[in-house]
Length: 340
Image (cartoon, rainbow, N blue to C red; front, side, top):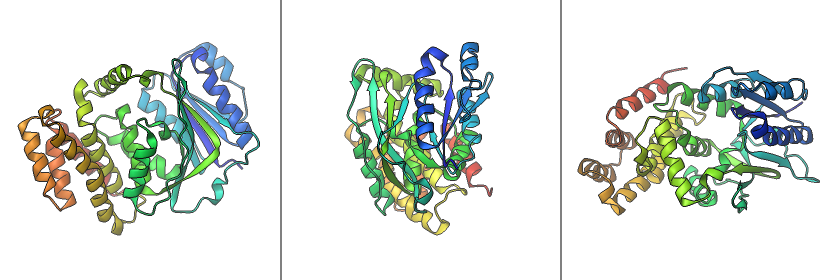
């Protein structure tokens, strides 16, 4: 019985998405997995190609669904114990001769499995592969190890996760997050790392298409586009660390978190020490990038030992990025803290 579903929200036409789709189906055949495609492309040729293509494929006609709705449809259609998100311009393959990872035997304190991740682009070809596990007992150490191993890009967002944990978190994100921005992929993977350990599968190779991120100029433009599309100022990149901190804090403290309630206060301190402290250091190193009010709030946060009070100070800081964003984050926090 399949343990894994690859979930692919797809907006590209058949010509642009076919390599991703074909690679995913070949992987599913090799690893006894399933593929779910939620398609909002409106491409009749693509629909004709996909209909009846494989008994392992579930096709969802998403109509005019938004990007967030398309992702939600793909995730909600999965019934297997594990899921793996995949873009429709990426590729995946099973390493020939290497046995499938035994997902059914993954220990309870592991929330997922990291594949071998190979970023690639049309201009640069395959880049340096990333292949590691995150097995430290301390969540802060796992965050640090991931930050070091990510090598500046978040291609390992495309990993294998326990469906119940990932979908519960993504439900709260897609339902209540203030922006639902694509820049939040970092917060999503860091949150999962806070929830538990990640094993490594050397037999799964995920090729992540980063053609829009393969130079400093493209990266700057792509980041600005991500923030603008989420309704934030284009220069929000300098607030990335603060946005990351706020998202992770809320998602690890939410009522549906798999972290036992007795351990959440300790985890909140770890998130503050790792993420909020990193942003504050950035403010100290580049004070000219921030106004006086934010610099003052940052100095207050440095001296604050209560993790929730520090979170409240961070909420005041985020209003310096966009007035009203604090209130939207407060609403996000209240919504996910409500009993299920």
